[in-house]
Length: 174
Image 1 (spheres, helix red, strand yellow):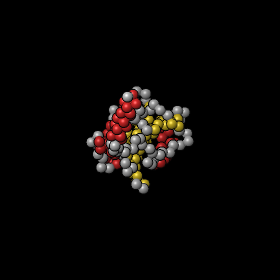
Image 2 (image 1 turned 120 degrees about the vertical axis):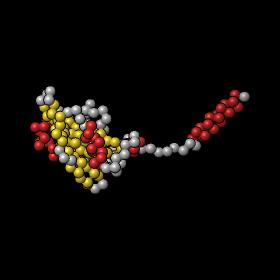
Image 3 (image 1 turned 30 degrees about the vertical axis):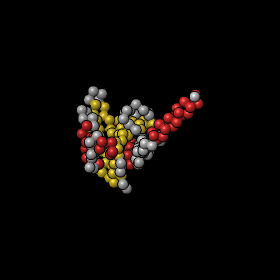
Image 4 (image 1 turned 180 degrees about the vertical axis):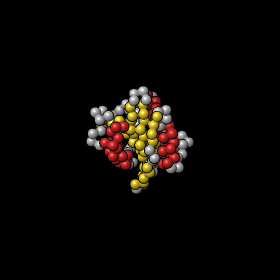
C-alpha cells in the first residue's frame, strides 16, 4: 500500500512537472554591454552618478566622468521616441544643470560608420564658490541606444584635457 501511494505521488509530480515544462519561453537579453576607452590616468570609480553604467576619475588631476545609456526600446516603452540624435541632445541639454549659470558652445555633429555623435563644451559658473567647471558633453547614438558621456574638470584645465575627453566620446561602441 505504501509503495502504491509513493508511486502515485511520484506519478503526480512527474505529470505536473511535465505540464509546466511545456510552457514556451520567450527569450530576452538582459544587461547592456558597450566598449569605451579611457586614458591611462583615469580609473573606474563609483558614487558620481547612481544611473551611470561606468564612472571614472582622477582625484589628483580633478577629472571626473560617467556614461549613462538609454536603449531605444526602453525609451519607446516610456513613450519617448526620438527621431534623431539632435532631438535627444536638445532634450537632454534643456535640463542639464538648468539652474546653474552656464555657457554652452555650438554642438558639433559627426557620423562615423553607423554611429552618430554630438559634442559640446559647457562651462558652469558656481557663484558661491567662485569656480568654473568645464564639461565635455557627448551624446552617442548607436543602432539600439543613446549614450550620454559627461567628463569634467576645472575650467582652467580645459585646453589640457579636452582632446582626451573627446577621445573618450568617440571611442564608444556597442
